[in-house]
Length: 271
Image (cartoon, rainbow, N blue to C red; front, side):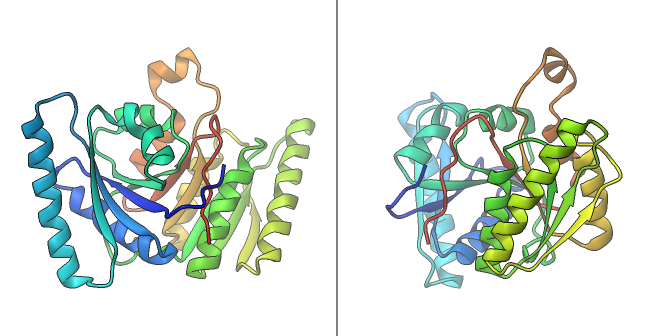
């Protein structure tokens, strides 16, 4: 689903100690894609004082940011309710195309992701290496939703000249193997057409273990972004032991992880 109006990079502001790291990453992403930065705070179901206090706090942060980045377009947004309740609203009414979040209270944020039409970018820290976003890892399994992750990889390749590593699962099942090949062919055609710096490699693992092998590869080869789809089918076991993306984000350390919900039509970036 495309949007033609002004688009925004949203940062989830919870006034935790690590919120500033999320804002730094959000500012960096807004610079890469030349979009407005919006500091977003859902103030729950409290009183009007909660909203006013959040607005004052975000206003102070914006004034400080403008001192260092006077040309940046920065705004704030406070909405009643929690993140899950507002995630569709910020995309549909306020033109968000991405939400940047820290990894605190991760379970609640992953639950909101399952309702989201925009990617969630999970960050932990703001080291100079993690802010470059110039080496992206794109694991590719047999699911059709790989096209959405490939599209976001292409954005970083086009607008940040990022190098993309496409890391394909090795499947023993013939049908899954065929789907991996089809996904790779689509991604190859897309990224070569856009003249993105890309290399292809093959995992030693199947689709289920692929994200974790990809993460190990990120650490060895100094990647600073990983793009994955969130879970499409959630079982009782997933609910009991935790979703794979939750485990991956927890293990990622200072490597930013972008998660895309495969169950909703994705909003796309407008040039």
